[in-house]
Picture 1 (cartoon, helix red, strand yellow):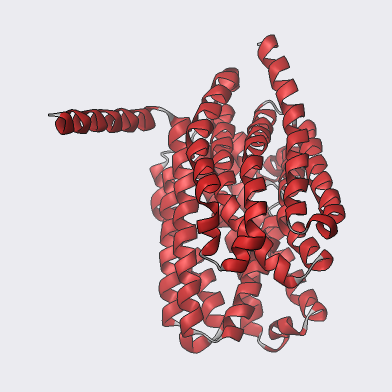
Picture 2 (cartoon, helix red, strand yellow):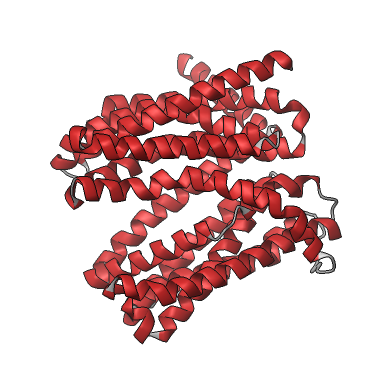
Length: 433
């Protein structure tokens, strides 16, 4: 009898949760965005394990470096188009206007990606002889140049789905990408480095075509190849592009530069401990980041209920983040031991700090989304660049003193300072509302 009652209560709660997800676009989008990250990370982990067994160490090392450079190039040449589309698309009229805005973003992204990819291919061999492959292997150079705009366009499509409250399409495209690149990597072993790298780019191209043929029509926005007036559309987007680009740069700077600082100020071995631990800690930040993106999309549809949506976002993050933090506090050592005893010894203090920092990080993530919805982009730029600068400065100073934990304390200090600014402003806004 007790078992039946517990079972009934469980299924009742499950059904209630399913209904809530169907009816609450904020929660639904958040869950799909998080699911996308978890799915691609899990398949990506398996991808590199298999690659390490069927390719040489040199091929895996060089291919992973080329892919990392390609993604970094795409990220910085994105020019804030992804966030700008989330800003604009929800309020565009279905049909020509909506299509023109999307096409304008795709044209800018394609041109910027081709230019950036070409520059990197020409310049990179001068910085490291490892990348001389671009000079004596034109096919690799061509694939790289094509891969940068392809990665930008797929990112823009993912953000288009988020903007249209259809992040389930993002999950579908990314899951298909992860599976296709895995299959191609296995089939192209005879190509060596190019097998891994071209498989990655071809998978992006395949899912781009699939998304265009299947997922875009699913949005029911009557997409068409609108080009008349595209120059004027680009001009109206320039201001938003610039602000959103700097907001994104501020968020990315510590991610890319702190590992460099750890290597320079400490050692490559210390960076291995830092990088691995930060990847584990990244799962905590995934929660608030996903909810913040969903909040941004919701606010772009209707700015008048942003305060209510902000409260809902805080509730969703709290419900999901607390269990994750408890797992880290109670089982952090066991998690780090999976990588080896040295990783547990040196990485556990950092993991603890990163776990605590997930709280102020969630506050600043939500705050930046609120600022974006309210078009207070200058403040968002100053906040993100300020936190990034403080993180980098403190990391540089604390690493020789505290080891890799110094980077964690730097991140904690910067996010706490930012969260205090955010809390003060959100309280003020709530009182005015």
